[in-house]
Image (cartoon, rainbow, N blue to C red; front, side, top):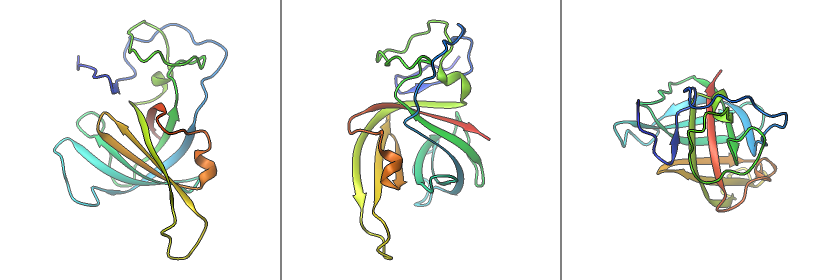
Length: 171
């Protein structure tokens, strides 16, 4: 089996098997995205693509680095993306240690999961049409980067230096 680095988790394995509790873990962000471009600035790494995607409900723009040898993404793919503070189904905080404890987690419901840290939140005032201010959220998942840009209310639950999980499932 592939090795699991501290920043990358492979869901769907038999490592998680106990029944979930009644309480659900909170999602800091969730939406359905469509891949609109791949590697807009050219291919930089052999096994990583930078995708650009737009969300359906919250009208967010995202750039995300994906390890394509593990999880290939293509133009037009549609996927659900969730940001969560923990993989524990009961919402209890993450301990900071990956454990093969044989219990069900939020990761079981997704195909691709990364663990990382939100390192920058800023406002984007560069719109030429002088429309509403947008927020830019930057996170790093073991060097794979994410930029999420859109309405500030969509990022209300996110905090600087927050550790989080990014979970993706194609729909």
